[in-house]
Image (cartoon, rainbow, N blue to C red; front, side, top):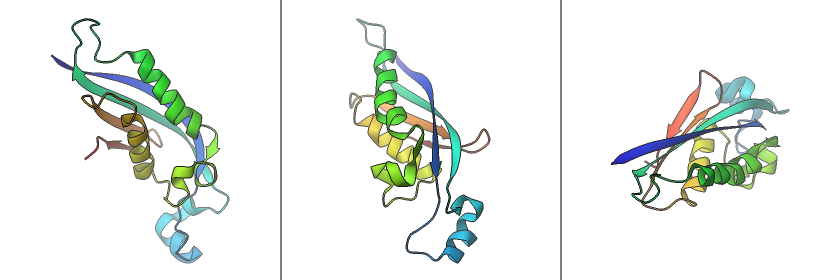
Length: 136
């Protein structure tokens, strides 16, 4: 049987949406108040879902403690209470949009999972705005 297990997590982070190669006027026109040079923050919510076959010996798709630890080490410790543009190397030259954050999150977690497992990550930037990425 194939089953999906999920874990919720969260982190708080600041960011600024802008492109270094654009003028302030163009950044403001495209990104609006999200391009504030003094940054702004979100309380991000994360749902990490792993899909695979149930292990006949353990009854698990994967040990949820291991998934919890991966999320903590790879995402929460790396992003929580950080300025994504300034303090997170992955966003040095990558605009930290929700779309880019979810792809980076997926890649960091996927690298730590057994390759036979499928992964989907949902990132809520606000309670009404969220993005989903499953490697496609």
